[in-house]
Each structure stands twice: as structure tokens, then as C-alpha cells.
Image 1 (cartoon, rainbow, N blue to C red):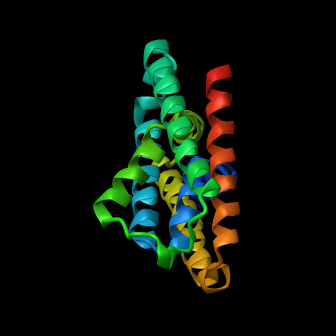
Image 2 (image 1 turned 180 degrees about the vertical axis):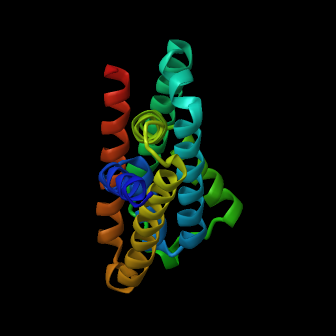
Length: 198
């Protein structure tokens, strides 16, 4: 049981920590202190549900359906290009980009954006459902494996959310936000291009 837990923890940490669209979004929300803890909790919940689905059978279904994978690929690329464009537009704006100078968004709007960044990104399915899930399906105690992967997700997303929020007072300059939005835009474009190249 402990071995299955540790396998889930180690494999999930290795895949979650890689900077991608979801992590860039959590970081941006955390630096803005805009509903960052609910965003982190939502990301953890999505990870747990997707890993569980992969461990208990969905990985096999997705691997055998080119149509589902193609739909996720093109839909995800379109969303990431749009989100990257919005971040690039903010980075090029002459307006101050500090969190205090932006109109706050509702929790619902932020959580819907977090869901879109999470669920419209095919890399999430490849990482959580196919890779983490298929390894978990072969574990001696798959439930312990899911718990290990969930632990990795909790530690990573809440560390990212709380750590970035703690640094926010030192990062509250317009130039910092321009750089952050530029980095987010580049990350979104890079992931979208990878999806399009397929």
C-alpha cells in the first residue's frame, strides 16, 4: 500500500510541476490575490477526478478514440491561443497592470476560467488520465496510488497559490505584471503550437 502511495506521489509530482497553462494561470491568479485559494482547490479537485478516472478505466477508452483526442487537441489549441492573445494584449497595454488597478473579477468568472484552462487543455488528459492513470491501473493498491497523486496535487497547487500570494506585495509594480502577462502569453502560445503540431 505504501509503495503504491509513493508511486502516485512521485509520478504526479514529476508531471504536475512542469510549467504549463494550468500552472501559469494559478500563478497569475495568486499574484493578483484574486480567488487564488478556490482556484488551487479547483485544480486539485480536477486532478483527483481525472487521475481517478484514468486509474479506473478512462485511460483505455481515450487511448482507443482518435476522435475524442482530436477534438480535445483542436479545441484546446483554440482556447490557449485566445487566452494567450488576451494576456499579450494586457502585457502591451499602457495601463498599470497591478492587481489593485484592475477591476476584480467575480469568483465564478475566475473559477470558470480555471476550469477552461484545466479541462480544455489536452495535456491535462495526457498527463493525468493517460500517463498517471495508466500507471495507477497496474498498481497493487490503486486507491493508495490515487491518494498519493492527490497529495502531490494538494502540495503543489497550494504551495504555488500561497507562495505567490506571499510575494505579491513585492511584485505589485506595473512592469512586473507586463512581464508576467508576457510569460503567460508565451506559455499559452507554446502549448498551443505543440498541440497543433500534434
